[in-house]
Image (cartoon, rainbow, N blue to C red; front, side):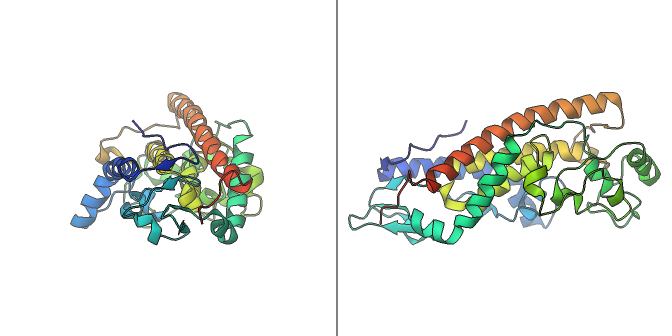
Length: 301
């Protein structure tokens, strides 16, 4: 269960906001327990560690609770008072200084809002079958793969799957990791410049990136929304690797064999569910962006 952040403009007494912060920290700790344990043992996990390396937010940063723009914290030992973009008014009330935030991050907020809105406005394309991961290892040597896992079908079998399918990747940050031999096989040419024009909600990487955009928006995003975005990214990442060419059996996972009709159907069905979950979260992030942009929320300073 997630704890909903309070409505905009509500003043939270210390015991109330502290309970929100404690529940947030406990939920974040549950999400990051494996990562923290592995770090202490100097071990890695090819699936889960992606969420902390590609999206460089530490477990400590993830457990830091933000109330969101417009929520006011009553006087007391409020750590937020020392954090960036927060302000304390003459009565000791602490809240996000929206004007200061927009002065520094307004351009980023507008870009993120534009991208999220454009992505959610499009129908989900569910015919890619996760071939982006296969294109990232196409015709690579055994010692060149991004992940220290064996290929489920071997090198020749993996290359054969790529060559027998139509590749239609819409996500620039996946496409840019294609091997040189795989790049011309993609029917599209995603770039950073056309990112807003191409991203669509059926793309697993676009779904994981909902978490990235939440982290980029920073303290205007309430803690419960941030963790909901992380949870979606975690769930998508698992499917992403199950459907990849890698053998993930060492992690206790079954493959989603997208080279088969059954695997394709399983993958497409999961894509639809993730697209719906992603668009719900995009809507919540857009509501945050809109309230900040249109002046619905104000700083207390």
